[in-house]
Length: 367
Image (tube, rainbow, N blue to C red; front, side, top):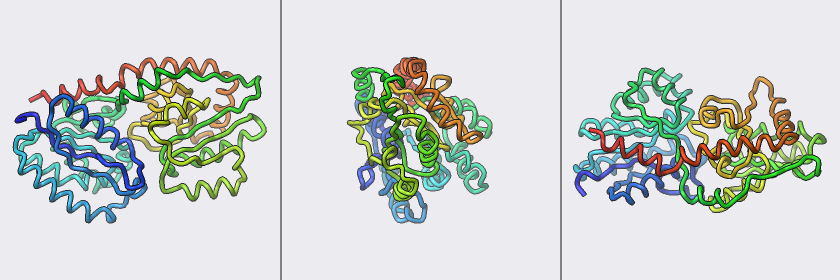
């Protein structure tokens, strides 16, 4: 299969606890699509053993093994002229720096897939900035998750000709499941419980504490329940905080939500909240969109680049705005469902795997 071999540095295994993130989904679905199109994929896995573990020092032994494996694979696969590399925050650029430089020396076509919103803060460090800028300079193409990221990289002096916008894709199974469900309905006049859902990493940076503030603020103003799904390093503190404020009857942690139950579970709620403060591309937003529920998100540029005017926003400037927005949505629910209908129709076309892969194939075919 000379000329159709691709070296692929990404995440191809779930963590030991069975959890996984957006890079795993993107890596495995892209790999499977490549194989289906008769490419040979040579994998180099970078999965963390524990999704909540992010410290570089804990990863050093595996990093050395990984570099040895990469060197072996790249040297013994001279026919692999292209390399895909998924990257997250500053640490990831250090982890993969030697791989990028070796690929450059050997004349590989390097395609980078930056995935984390933490890169904005990483640019503030002179050390991280060196590794990020050098990696971008050594690459041939950089896949941007949205127009926001294309503009951001241009502002950091990355050549525009290297940049291609390909929004995160959704697999066919999720699309098919979405087609079998209806948009939710709700009337505050019926005094039914207004069900709110959060699905993401359980971390402070994901805005998890905003849900505590919300529950306290709307008590007595709305018949509601908040269900939290996910995994992360802040679970213990979250459960303790719920108990401290005696919110067990209205706010509950449900654990990890399996992919097979994702769309149906989200769709059984009336509102999805996305309070994350740092995002590369908000994959949970895509889950909410395909579950057809109205969305309320913290106002950051990377989320606006995806949701536009068809989702609702709040900010730290007025945290009470979160509770006010929730009450507004509950009181005028049908108009917010119309927003869900509009963004669903848009993403159904733009974020299909087929659409994304066509753009990636264009990159592969370029000289």
